[in-house]
Length: 414
Image 1 (cartoon, rainbow, N blue to C red):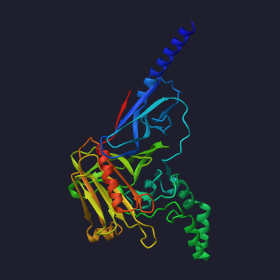
Image 2: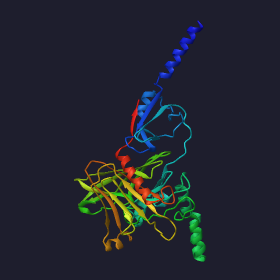
Image 3: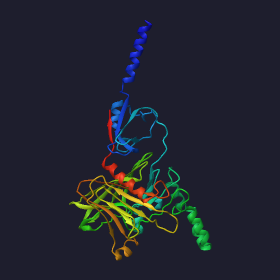
Image 4: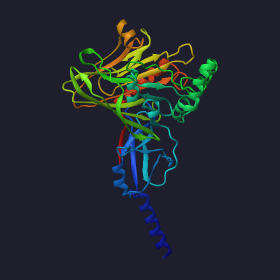
């Protein structure tokens, strides 16, 4: 009887070990001969819920091959995202099952700032960005492009604190008072709170002006850039801990006399990446039209790479105050689809001085946009005081990034 009991227990144990109904196995494969550490992958939540037969209130955990929990996020479009590390030409296996997740550090987040003329600003563990809103447009300031904020010495969020210091009403009132009696003290107080000064974790030292800034896309009918002004509406769809997503809709553009063309952008920033994924669509566009992603040039002969064949552009920006020891900002864009042409295009002298705030031109990657399609590209930046130190390292990062978006990790669920 004792032997029979042991036999039954062994069979039940073995059955439990092979019963995979309560575990989803995710295999991530890398088609490239380069290591891909901590790259965000996606799995449809419906696939997981159906296979695990999860109740509506059930929680899940994502485990690596060692059984350790991996941070994850469920996105607005019902995907489970998590960082996967895969060897060159290799595979990595993760499992998803019901369970209680650990607390994960927030790596990526952002906010709409009505108190700062409708900015939308966001960041991850490496870098921060912002785009401008309707309140800024109403002031008459001409700012069409993305802004870059540098970040170092921390992987924690910094943007909220920077705005709080810059916009504190009591401090602003004190500065205004001091300007009347002690301008030097007023300037010192301003420097102590301004996000244009490095207080140990980076600053805003990138100049956008009336240009495409750090990677904005724009239609180019007849070879002329139609600059999109500030967004009309914003909707933050994801807000961490691993992904920030915002949907921006713009006022109608005038394209060849048609003033009904409306641009929509969905911008996504993931933890661990220097680049934002951006999906652009133009409603009511009547014909195939060139579209360009552009990076402003602040030197007529600056360090530019425009590589259409390999799908990326880069520029080494001198920052807005070259005498203030702000280093260099590396800016770039990468393209999963074929780029028709990549080049630097300098402004005529009159346009440079009268319309573009003294900027010298753009480096552009130009493609054709088909009506009803989506234009997908990646744009972003790094800083030579942070993790990427040299133009050569940035160009290598961008070349590799372009290869990755053209050869994405493949995800198999069973």
